[in-house]
Image (cartoon, rainbow, N blue to C red; front, side, top):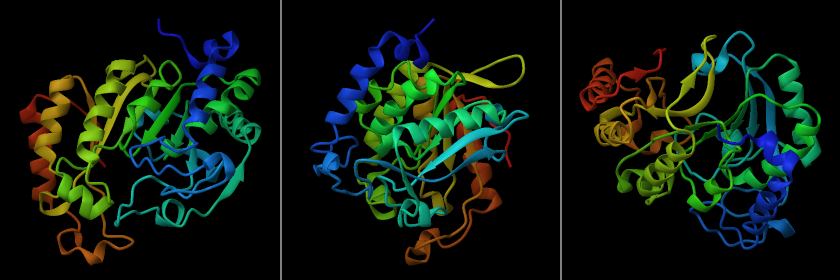
Length: 301
């Protein structure tokens, strides 16, 4: 069995990961943005985060995928800031305006343990890409306090392989978005023209680390990859190419094809995403997945 984060913490190996992650903050090259600011000195780049992580909220979440929720909910910790600039972001007050509170490693560890004590089945780090060093710093404190539930990396898919390698045997469940298959669309909607390449590389690495999603007898996810894909109007997400990629990775890839897109934030500035997808557009996305050979599609809501 792969080593878990608690084994790494107790053996002392986790400290090497912490040191390596902190080194990526100066100059910052934690994600594909490669901003180059000195976050150890408090400077902020695209993600609007300095030395300490900022948290908007934490608590049990019952709106996530069923294998994460169970009876006790998924223990979500919402980080402020983001390394993507999605103009339709529904959480723009957290992601773009970065409202929230700075937390120390001990504070973050306490949040994790409290969520576990409240009966949550996992700790779900939401938008964690720019907070990887801070998460790693918190884990020794959390393990010492008894943390043992699976860790979920709930990200936008715009990741650096160098950073993901530091999370091997730390993260149990990777839950990336697969937003777009075309760079021009990614540039226009998220200010990230290299998003498709970085996303495909990242998901491939995530799958290498944790494999297909494993669900226990109680119906709870314990380890593996769960991919989210938001259907956008007028085919802006490039769904068929994404489904073909995921099926080539594994036809057992667990995919949530989501139909809840609604224009938010600055979506009105781009005509193509100024409306929700139609039922036909959503049906075509499901068809693209099944035609590619994918068969583990999340319950649709």
